Structure formats: C-alpha cells, structure tokens
Image 1 (tube, helix red, strand yellow):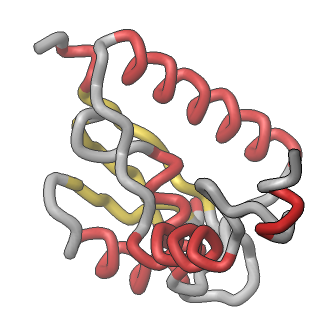
Image 2 (tube, one colour):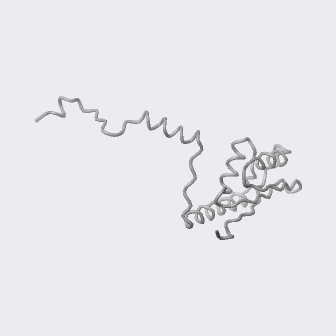
Length: 132
C-alpha cells in the first residue's frame, strides 16, 4: 500500500468555548486507528491516520457532531476544503469503496424513500388507464 496514505493533520479549535482540546483528544483517541497529540498552546490536535481508515472530513464531522467548535477563520476553511478534496480524490484514485453514510443519515433517506411515491405507482384512475 502506498505510504502517502498515512496522513498527519492538524485540527484547530475556536477560542470559545475554552478547554475543548483535552476533551476532544480523549474523544478521538477512542476511535480505532487514530493517533492524537494535543497542542494546548495552539488550541489544536495533531492527528495521524491511514486514509483507508479515516478522512479528515470524517474526523471533523465526528467532533462537530459531539458539540466541539472548530476554528472557522477563512484560511482554516480553505485549508480544510483543500484537504477534503485531496483525500477524496486519493481514495477515488485507489478505487477505495465509498464510506457508508452514518446510520442516522441512512435511516433518514430510507424513511424519505418509503413516503415518496416510486415504482409503478400511478395516480391515474383504473378506468382511465383501461380507456380505449
């Protein structure tokens, strides 16, 4: 497997609320195949992972879902967007299967599909369909 699939990234947190770094570090360390190193003075976490196991987008979304506030300065947003794009492209180029949606998101799509008319559903009354 190519070594460029080993990623080392920095996740920056906003100033408020204070004290997010140690809690977020504990949270991410519970995930499999993620190495985390807190950088308290920079309000950030250094994370290392294999691209086939995790992506930065997945880790960021995990933290946001847990209620953490990531840094949203323009430079950080641009850097984050570029990394997301590069990682998605790398995964696509190596033919990695797409990650499944989160269970709750997938269930939302299933529920919407069940309530949406599909298949051979036709609102035309039967007598009009048989009209000759």
